[in-house]
Amino acid sequence: MRSLISVLLLLLPLLSVSAQTHLPDSFVVATPTVPVQQMDSTYLAQIDSLMQTYETVRQQQKVEAAVRQFEALRLKKEMSMSTDGVLPLARGLLLTWTDHNSITHPAQFERKGDGCNWIDYGVAGAPLVANWVMKAAGVKSRSKLERMLTANAMALSISFGASELLKHTIHETRPDRSDRHSFPSGHTSFAFVSATVLSREYGYISPWISVGSYTTATATQFLRIKHNKHWMHDLYMGAGIGTVSTNLAYFLTDKIFGADAINRPEVRRKDVLRLMKFNTLPTGYSFVAGTEIGNRKVKFDDATLKTGAAIAVGADLSFHTSPHFSIELMTRAVDAQMKVYANESSDSPIYTGDNLDIYHFDAGVKFSTPVSLGQRVGTRIFAGTRIMDGITLTNGVKSYTIPDETKFECGIGVSYECLDTDNYAWGIIADYYHTFSHYMKNRYSISSVWKILF
Image (cartoon, rainbow, N blue to C red):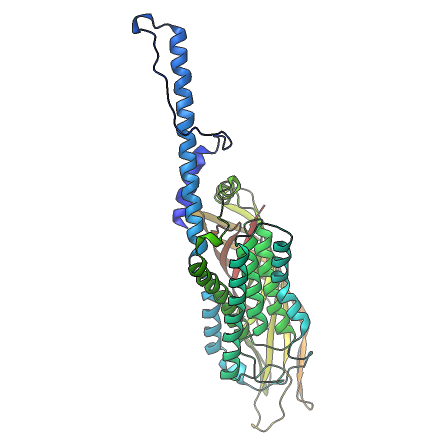
């Protein structure tokens, strides 16, 4: 990233030079034949004209050299092994440990469809279908046909093989207790293969393609939770497996076919302008997906209701009034799986499990500053409303209810953003929410961010 930015810095003062002027193979200046004693204004004007042409050619040569260097770095990045996917894998492993008691504690969640839920597969595969429709329509992709076919087939094979191996090794029970193939989520791994393929092939065209593809993959995660087919750590492991499998497949394919199978990335003026805007007025829309934790218990006289880590998705709108200050509008939808820990004998009937839905609607102000070219850090304060849909958990004899409520909340957050070379900015946001409520009033969220600059 630093090398790419240094090239962009070199390009900045040269953008005014026309890139369409044909460069001569060599620049030859005929030696003036006028004797020195007869130099006059006409002769000096000729010399000045020749010098201006010479300087123009030198500037054009500098532009060409900078563009070639930038495109070489982009090609190197395209052929390197990306580390995307490592963070979801780490989150999945962490949640496997921290949420172990919540996952293994028995509860009967409602069955919503069969194990496949084909609508979930439809959402998961939409980016991959879009990728091949665009290829068939003749839209230029990053890969030539042989590279795309091989990489896609390899990514799907690695992802499916890893998911199935873990499913039949771990034997984790699903929330609806329909089978013991919960870990990891195969739908999610397929969704992130699909999203990563589309982003790698066509993300250069528009940031909406990359952000839209990962939004679709995250929607698949949300559907799997809502359909009571997976726990949170299943989803993160699935996302990590899908992303890592795809990046590994492209890396191995490049080792087989080499650079000739790639339609080489090209430098564009809008990439430089995007970098300038990110460091001055980065107004934009952000898609957010992550985990919300914090107060997880609601206590009754003879039982405690507990949630595991909750999935949180949403969007932020950031309007910059200056390079450092912005107005923030934030929305979040949170799904937390809740169970009853009753103070009864071990042979008591199993309680139902259910999904507690929480919604945040907030507005605030943010201070952010560049720490280097293409990277920003910031902090924000906000306030708004938390809406919680109540639920009732029962064992057929006794029940426990959390009521509906709408409460005022406020909070504070910190963020890091980095401008990616594929048209969008990515980052991490950590927020703290304090709600004036008797139920789970202190909550924390850690989220990944994909931002599109306006």
